[in-house]
Length: 239
Image 1 (cartoon, rainbow, N blue to C red):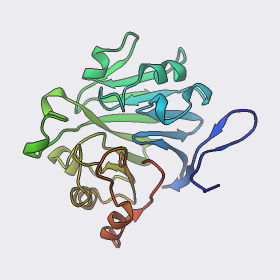
Image 2: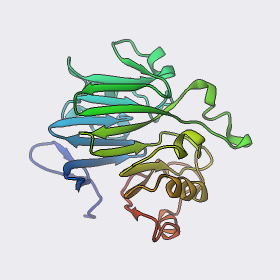
Image 3: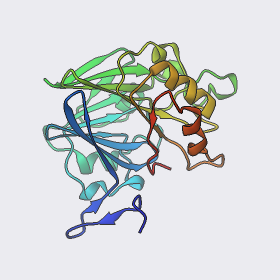
Image 4: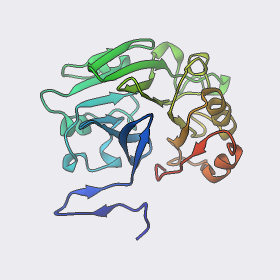
């Protein structure tokens, strides 16, 4: 079985590919499910990003302390996944359009908003939208979709782009340690756009994500070569 194939541990609990990192003296674990669905574990807290039932068996995974949703498209916002993950103390942070369709309590995140669900976890919403004329209908700026910068313990900053092309708001971000930048045609960035975005962000580690599951596959190995000498590119099974 491939390292990146899902394997099963004790009982029927699923185990997914993970990276355990120590950055700026802080330990964290990243879990990779599929498409735009990932999780961050830090100091015993679990943060799930864009959970979708088709990407992981969320009914068998640990409950969430924080859930982040970038926008209301079906491959990012899934009520069933949220219901499986949430517990009474879960903080649910949703972009405006997702919040409008959410029946429970949540934080509505607009671009520029900041939330601090815990003293050592800070979440900043970053505008996410298309800029190319032929793609404006996919993620219009006026819908106010979000990417997020998650700061852990004032030491580690993780940028999760959501669905976007390069924007001025994105380019203005500073001190990014880990970047998840989408590369998925024809809806988000081309490989060349992703390279430009990563060069502007200058993260220590870049994870291409939100690639695959479309008719135009992304050559992530070629993308990594374009970023040699710029940052460490880690390719994980998010297709």
